[in-house]
Length: 429
Image 1 (cartoon, helix red, strand yellow):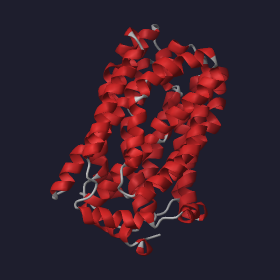
Image 2 (image 1 turned 90 degrees about the vertical axis):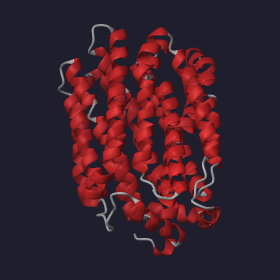
Image 3 (image 1 turned 45 degrees about the horizontal axis):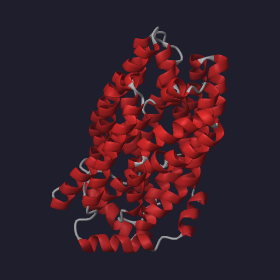
Image 4 (image 1 turned 60 degrees about the horizontal axis):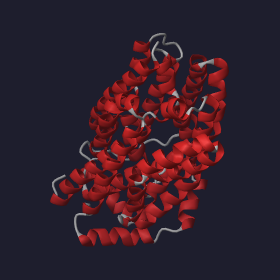
């Protein structure tokens, strides 16, 4: 990270991730609690909200991925996300909440479109863009993504307390951080020099829909999709209503809400530390083994939740997310970089991971809501945990073994991947 533009982009894009996740956390860290306690939705209706949200995101993710890859280093799609972020406060307070109470199905559909464009698919756009710039200008993505975790932690630290005062406060604070996000995006110069940016964008413009569609027939892409469907999507379904489960272990619901907010902040602070430590760990064990390790931690947390019998035990299991997420994200982007055409990095991430996660979530959320109501949270968690453990074993045999040596600082790797972006025919795999 010796180039001045690299250091500048690292600072600016760390701020971009910080403010994006700050907005997201203020708006959605207590989303299921807000639906249940403020809007008045029960378990099955809440599951329907999550399910439709996931289905709408399925329609957005392939478009976002292809457009972002086609744009290369240009920021037009980030500007769209910034505008939607700024509108999030008024939308949640004045339109989405009242509409859910007045006309549930219409509210669900309208909310799903907005949430999908802004957060469901928007987060993938922001993360994949930062990862791309990190490869081009030479800094480690995980160290920048650490600031996203810190942003989430800062919001969740006070979100539960503020929710008990007035749920709308969180949405307005999210709007304020969205204004900062937009300002930082305007200042980013995504390459070390104009010529480098021009060459990258010219190569990106050669990408065609046929190139993207060819991924469907790629066995390596199908293997990554299987990992995502069988592990990440089930884990997402498990985590959706975890705040409700956690609050139910307390005698006072308000106390559960507040403590969950504090616990979430601790978890995300630990997650930020994990983002800093994950790159050297993944570089040492390899991207494939990193994905398997993350899946194993997910299965452990889910199975443990099925047997935990106290708020302290449930809270301790919550903190495992701080280890799983950094390893997963760093491993995933490194796996994509050494396995697929560099021009398609956003498409692979947004479709092979984010799309497949949402597909599984959309298929399972309503069923999971019904299972929670009929069997209870803990029995359901045991079943889901065993399924995830099985897919971890399957993934060991189908994921591609790393074919390149990953560096600890990321500079040599970034230079190699930048070369691949300029010369895609020489790309590995």
